[in-house]
Image 1 (cartoon, helix red, strand yellow):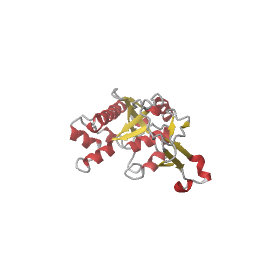
Image 2 (cartoon, rainbow, N blue to C red):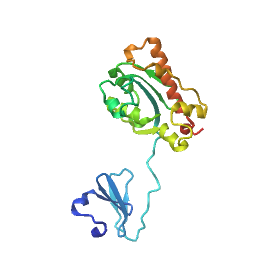
Image 3 (tube, helix red, strand yellow):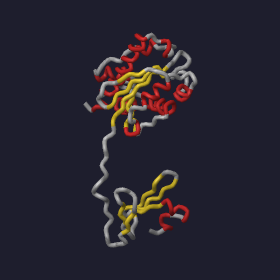
Image 4 (spheres, one colour):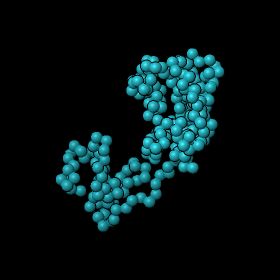
Length: 238
């Protein structure tokens, strides 16, 4: 490969790899990929070694086999958090809201694939322990407005799922402004159920302010949100 043709300097050469008739150059996290002309190189499937055939008459080929890719589990989640008339997402940014000293998780509901959702309410420390039972490193977080729930997982609990999926973004891409992006509007549009209103009764209430009965109702509300999110046809394809 001509170094002048691809402008590969001596300092960059250690970031250059030759794979299947291509030269790949990595700089600042990006990969530039161009076809070579003079040599044929074959990359082992385990990516541990590069084998040069040194045969310019051999055509470049792409391996016909691929490592097995196992499907990820969907982990559908929904957080219910403290808010009041001044401390809410309608008054401050999401970052300010989640990083605020006032931030408190009232409870969280989680389901894995098609399993029924489970509700948990406890201290932040107990919630962190409860969340740790799920395999986030090999799971795709599914939520409505995933940016919010994923930020809570990451910033407050140090949990970073392997992948993210957001039904709010899906709905906006499919329906635009015709249906509305809220989970309530989408549930009505697809006739899959009714979103509750218990969140309105939670205004200004910390977790300690809920009676056991109120907390149970809030848990049912949260689990219903998880079920609606999972049942949306934009997720299931039904």
